[in-house]
Amino acid sequence: LGIRMLIWQHVELYNPNPPPNCVGYIHTNMSPMNVARNASEDARSMCYREYGTHLHLMVFELVKNSLRAVQERFMDSDEVAPPIRIIIADGIEDVTIKVSDEGGGIPRSGLPRIFTYLYSTAGISLSVEHELSDIGTMENVTMAGYGYGLPICRLYARYFGGDLQVISME
Image 1 (tube, rainbow, N blue to C red):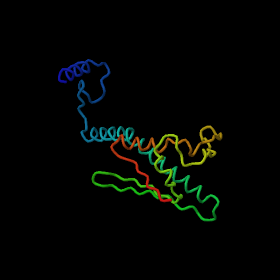
Image 2 (image 1 turned 30 degrees about the vertical axis):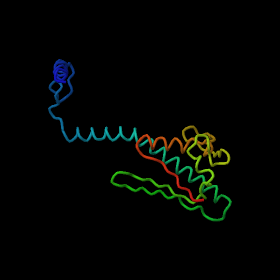
Image 3 (image 1 turned 60 degrees about the horizontal axis):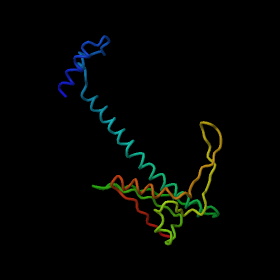
Image 4 (image 1 turned 120 degrees about the horizontal axis):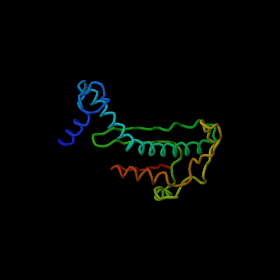
């Protein structure tokens, strides 16, 4: 490390276009506060890319499933569909995210299979029209029916030391 620092310093001393406020590799006006802020932001961004994307995918999948169940249950009803509730509990060692809905639940006979790939509680693949804002055309987007959402979400949760549990009341 020491040799590398000496080499960098030597190379930068002979740089024909040195950065301002630098003597070789050494910044004379360096702010430890700014360096700490930049390093913290870089670490936060890296952490979010690694973990945040997967957490987003898991919550997205659970909320999407809840929305579908509630919409299907109240579609032909005069009642207003109840909201989906998300509760986040921050404990000493764990963070728990609870997604709760009134979509009717999963039949008990289907519960053992919900984490099996290609199993779905949706009767058929449900498509909805989705407008692509950047192109301005319509495209079919499948809401449910492939049977990989929950198994993938549980796999991510377990990979990062957590778990995904589904407790259903029909």
